[in-house]
Structures are given as structure tokens and as C-alpha cells.
Image (cartoon, rainbow, N blue to C red):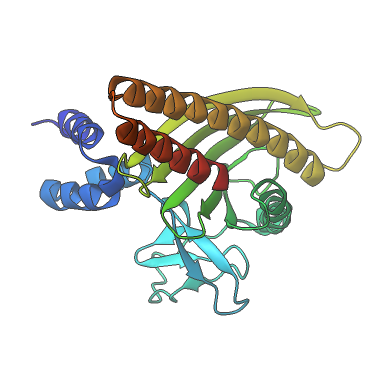
Length: 276
């Protein structure tokens, strides 16, 4: 079987398996295919619920994904160090952003931590990772990812938001921002076990205005990601509430006790969604 067929078959299989166990299914498929290149492509193409680690230097939690990973280690956006420290290999050192991009990454983490505090009611975790896309160390063109995670107080529901973006210079005073946003929603508190994901893309050309380049990038990216999250929240709410309504309406029975159970189940799902 060709590489493309293996890749497409793997993705097709993942779409048909229980989304609540996507991490375990992905690991199993990677083990079966036993192909390093295919494994890397699958890991970077399939969104899984985000895990967190604690930065030993700062004591702050950070989110882990394929974009800050080197082997079994993950780079902390707070200290710019890998946790745990990877083995030293001079021929293949772990990736780091350039000095200018690291400075922007630090400010981006501070900015989106404020965004998380405002939009996620003071809870959750945020992390931002940037990487260079050109040989020259400039802020004209680069790429990155913004990660946001929140769980309900009883850990029965979670919201994972992943925004992978690319910034492409368009000439003097403007840049093209491309954002691919994915949201993974899991509500396992009820018998319905609602879970799934949505992915959408946005792109927009924005001018830098009169502020400096770093601030312009943060404002433009923040505006686009805020818009993307708003759209995804509305889409998920429509999908889940409409689906729930269909289930409840089809399952209505004549006796009062069954109707009461349906009402309680619906109220429980709505409450869990509001907590995220």
C-alpha cells in the first residue's frame, strides 16, 4: 500500500472510532503502521486533547502539543527550556525560536494569558509557541500555535482550543494572517457522552498601523483568534443543542417520569456547556 493510501486510511479509521479515545486510537495506529514519517505526519495532522506539564523554573503549567515537542520532552513557553531536559546531541539540537521571535513569543504568552483570564473566567491554561519559517531572523514572516484548555470543576467536561497560524509578509505595512482553528469538546457527565471536534480556517490581510511590529502582530492575531473562537463556540452550540433536541424529542414517552429524566438530562448538558 502506498504512503498516501496508508495516511488516508488512518485518518478515515480515526473518524469512525470513538472520539473520546482519540489519543489511544492514534497511538495504536502509529504502532501498527510502524513508519516514522507517517507517524510524524499523523501526529501533526490529528488533533488530540491537550495535556499539561509544570515548568520547574517558574512553577507555571503549560500545554503540550506536537509543535513544542522534541522526543519525549516539551518546551515551556515560560522558561524556554525543555521538560524534562532532553539528552544532548550536538548534531541534532532541539528546536528553539530565534531571539527576535522568542521576544515576541514571550509577549504573546503574556497577552493570551490575559485573554484566557477574561474569556475563560479566570480558569484554564494557555500557551503560545512560535517558530521561524525563513532563514532570516525577522518578524516579517513566521508561524505559531495558540493553545487554550479549560475543564469543568468536576473534570467531567473539557474544551481544547488549537489555533495554528502563519504570518506572511505582503510588503510594506501589512501581512496575511492564516489561522486554522480546531476545538475539541468532551462532555462525559451525562449518559449522552457528547464529544467531537470542529475545524475551521480564517485568513485576513491586516495593516500594521502606527504601533510597532510586535504589537501589530499581537493585535491582529488576537483579533482573528477571538473571532475564530466565537464562530466555533456558536457552531458547537448549534450542533450540540440541535442534536440533543432531536434525541430528546425522539425519545419522549407518555409517562411523566421518563419526561422528567429527559428534562434533567438536557439541563445537565446545558449546565456543563455553560461551564466551559
